[in-house]
Image (cartoon, rainbow, N blue to C red; front, side):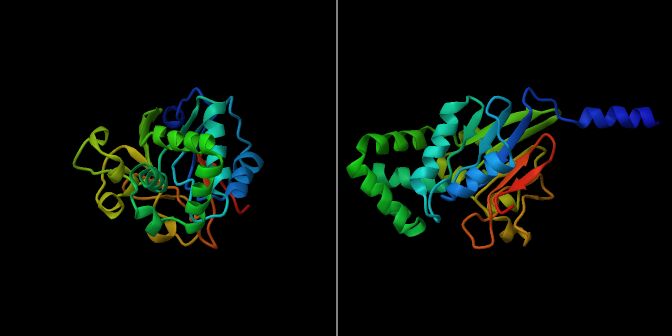
Length: 240
């Protein structure tokens, strides 16, 4: 009996080619907090760790350019980094590419002003940032042991394959996904702060319907950025 329990336990431990699978929630321009979380607390190793960022690198904070350039640097440094597109990156793309005004309503005036200035003073670097945002995937899938994970900024329309869905749905959906998803895959999201999901501690929250919510309110006074290792279950938060 004991031997069977031990075999079962080891069967449940995810097998991976990486030391850790690290997933990080919304950054919202908190550059110093992100650096502290990733390097001081999480001891991130680009050679051994697989890193997944869930989007929303800009708006609501105070260091937009440094934050997005840090994300760009991580992607350039290692092929084992997946940075997803969030709704705030999508708004910025639409604003500069198509003149969409949603960003003026939902974004931060200071962020818009900084990128407008950059567009004039450093057009080449500005264009690199725009092209980088446009290149960001909308979702990522991977297996860990017997479990299948889907990483997406906001969620998806549960009535259709995720591969057929557009940026508007994957970056913006909220209650229609969170309240009605009942699949076997574990879906890891940002976008909706855990404080709005019943967790006043502002910690990553595993919902009963296989959704892991990682947005712990970096842009709120009592919030932070959170990082979770999906292999070992360890959690780091930027306010530590």
